[in-house]
Image 1: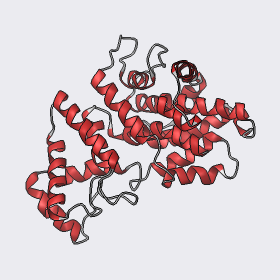
Image 2 (image 1 turned 135 degrees about the horizontal axis):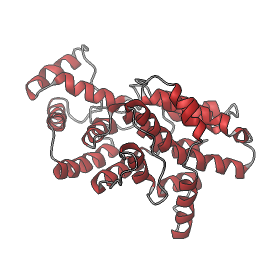
Image 3 (image 1 turned 180 degrees about the horizontal axis):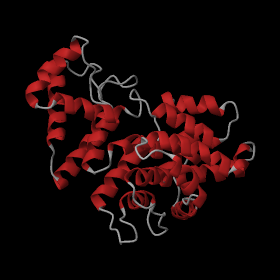
Image 4 (image 1 turned 135 degrees about the vertical axis):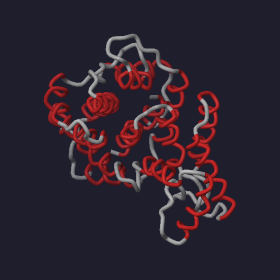
Length: 309
């Protein structure tokens, strides 16, 4: 939330400003009971969480019709607080709906990241202890994804915002763009690619197929960075810590081997890992369902969307 405050206001908060900001977010995190009953319950059980998030963020527009008054700065700020606060609640509720477990309300005694994890994984009314390794990792992932200039989804949000649509529809449009595999959905595509490669023995053949134009290499290269994505460096360091504490997985070891072979055969000429390469592996290790990877990206990015708006 410190980074969110920085993006929205242009400066980091002092202690009292942060306390006030955190309280505002916490108090706005609940969603209307009718939202659960009439909107979330209308989706199929197997609905992808990102489609549910796009639709439910847009639906908030009908619950807060005053959001259309975008010329009022006080009203604008209220809507920004609401969107940042309610995104984790919407994403967690979409997940609970898909697995058939009761919705969990936000807990006022938990911080933003721990609250999201509680709403995701708390087993009903039973006491829930947030794993500090999981919380620290997810908090850093939220920071790394908070903003990245005028990319595809941010541009989509700015275009919709230019028509003076309300901010919920702006964020919904941005999330729709984010959902594609060439953007926010790329971390899901990385996992599918690694599953297809399957083993160390298949890495060379896979890279040959990529060079021949027969396969697509996901999680490498970037339109902005011609060397290694700096966010990827942070994520790889985080991954080393998380996998050291929780134990490595064959998928993570395969990813490191793919990066090693790519560096050996191609070199760092636009073929370096980007932020998507390691983020999906981290989410998977943290036992976050694949359908939630892109919604989590949306939760993180919403403060950036609102700063641009």
